[in-house]
Image (cartoon, rainbow, N blue to C red):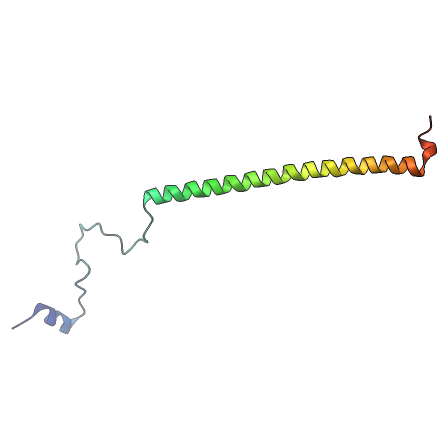
Length: 95
């Protein structure tokens, strides 16, 4: 009894799990990496967009708060400067 697999294994290695020389085969799963399905890509892109928008809004809020803080610091500094001038140099305020 002659077994085709045994005869093929004696001469050279044969891989029966992969399709043989079929030029009409469109199976490219071995050549290309697996990509996520389109709905998952859309979800990932939406998540990335939301993340970027949140970071941008946080930067905007931070800059606004910094501006407000600097404004208050400037106002307090000017008030303290005026009070200091009035206290230490009362003759400058006389009219």
